[in-house]
Length: 158
Image (tube, rainbow, N blue to C red; front, top):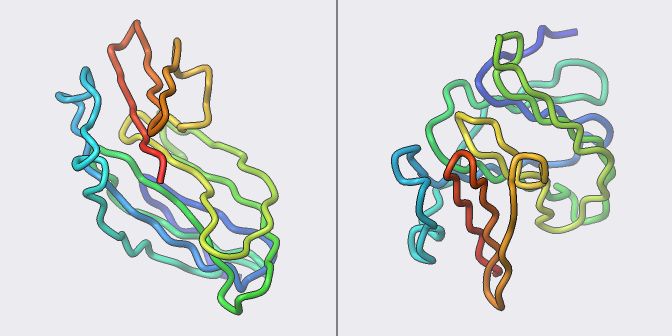
């Protein structure tokens, strides 16, 4: 068995080892979070290559050693085209005082399947309703916000 990887962000994938993890990043500095990103800003994503290691039988970890201020999108696909089943856990700042873990749970992966979105360095998951005080939805986007912190996070529909 190999030792566990460490970094600011870690996705643990347990189950089918034919699951390939895809990670993208878009900058969203703290200084600009009091206004929503435009569609062109939201589309400026870059692919990130995490460090990936098999840590035990049927488990692998993908780590982003140093996370920048912005939104990380984790998606997965099956390497062999068929369906693959895996259990996902997202960890931020593991073994530190700001440690946060999100149990995403079991997913059946086919083509590109969205797993999670997380805002760093705050470690706020898009799916964590307790992190937001409200949301607005229109025909092409969803905006979640927190009135106490002034955070606005807008995701556009594809």
